[in-house]
Amino acid sequence: QVQLVESGGGSVQPGGSLRLSCAASLRLFSFYVMAWYRQAPGKQRELVAAITSGGSTNYPDSMKGRFTISRDNAKNTVALQMNSLNPEDTAVYYCNVDWHGRTYWGQGTQVTVST
Image (cartoon, rainbow, N blue to C red; front, top):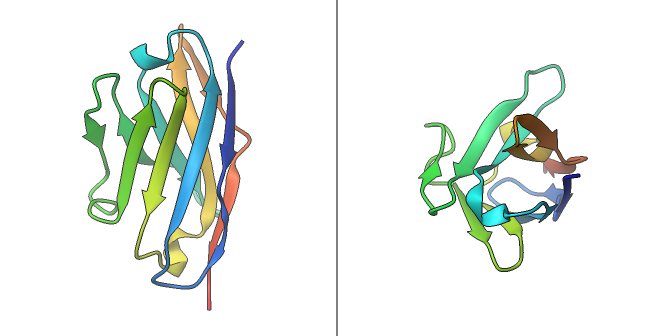
């Protein structure tokens, strides 16, 4: 069974930063692509960042330069550093992995950017 537990969300002012973390319980964590998604109210869930087993990263154009994904294979964790946050980044952020043909999600962590 796979469990993904996110932490680090909260409220921040525009221009601020947050660091999210996801603790993953799955065998052979280092073998799998890990990703962060987000879902804002009334919108579809969207990819924020992904990282391969080898550490290669992928970001949508709108996230490049502001968000950085990283992983610690020794600790089975994946992090998302978010800088220069703006109100449009307000959403629930989810950790994600496709493992043995199934997609797993964490419970999500709320990020709110407002004055």
